[in-house]
Amino acid sequence: MARVMAVSFERYGRLYYLDPGEQDYSVGDRVLVPTDSGPEVAECVWAPEWVEEDGFSELPVCAGLAGPEQLERDAANRRRRAEAKLAAKKLIKRNQLPMKVVAVDFVDSGIDFDQLVVIYFTAPHRVDFRSLVRDLSATLHGRVELRQLSARDEARLTGGLGSCGRELCCSTFLVDFEPVSVRMVKDQDLPLNPLRISGACGRLMCCL
Image (cartoon, rainbow, N blue to C red; front, side):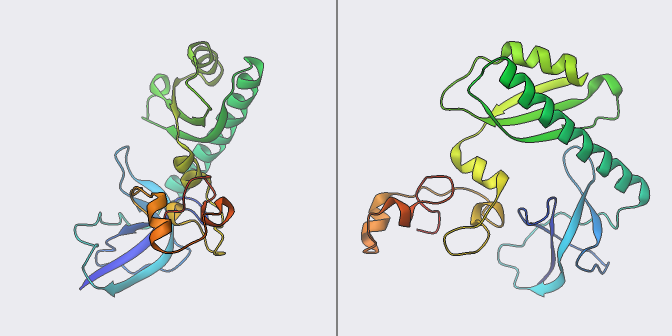
């Protein structure tokens, strides 16, 4: 048996599982989650409880409740991400690039001249965005990195409801995308109707 809790960085977003340690947390608590760039604020959406250990071994340990300083920093980062997303959309339109901004991640290193803004986008093909990066760096006063996403990754980040009426599997609990083929559809005697077997990403549904 293992004691497990679940948190989400965005409301109705993907779930991340943590070891609560010796502490007790309630749904709605703002807690600190260890990440590669330091502790980040997330919301507890599943209070700690005992579960079977399968799939829950070696989870990161929750770093405790978020204090006023961490909450203020999190709110500031959310505002900066929103500002960066708006600036990116305006510059993409100005440069007439076939790109769609999906999400923005602001990485604060604690050094004013070493701030990194990661902008995730989708495009129908490869895009030469070198001039866009220069414009964004000048506008946002920091380093900018652009990362192109696949249709499945876009659905994971944006979230939404599937045809079953539940939150998308990819944006809640799926860790990796497993290959899905038409043969799986035929093996289950399902109709080859794209509207019935396609997910929000336009690809074959992961649950097939």
